[in-house]
Length: 181
Image 1 (cartoon, helix red, strand yellow):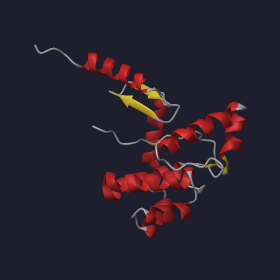
Image 2 (spheres, helix red, strand yellow; image 1 turned 135 degrees about the vertical axis):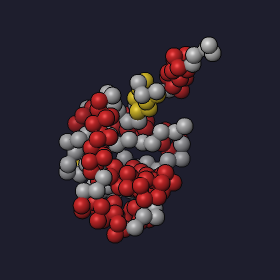
Image 3 (cartoon, one colour; image 1 turned 60 degrees about the vertical axis):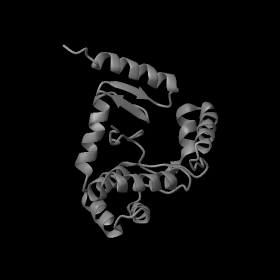
């Protein structure tokens, strides 16, 4: 079965929007642009929209709240539509997915009620649940995205080759499969 995505903030200190390339240069130095270019090539090869020159680093907490709301309002299908719209807006269009009005507009494009989203963001709805998910992620040692957790204790973090996943899945299978008694 496929687990639901949980909330995690790559940079909880990101409060004011700033260009992603500027942010990455400050964090990774000279490696930033080459690494970002590589990720962009992989994204485009997989058919994903990507434009690092437009991307901005923002506080994604409001976006996580909207994604939880989408799950509760319309299930996984609606959450997936909203997530897809937010990804394109963030990674290709340079939208500020921390801005409540921007989020309301983007989620309306994905099928949610704009008014409902505005009210939820203004009232703090889903805040406690998202904060708990973030705390849970930190407790199990998540520090990168994506992170895949198997059986609640084996984490594969960041972009990893297929062989890494195969190795972890073999280990999980060996430890969780018990011979019949």
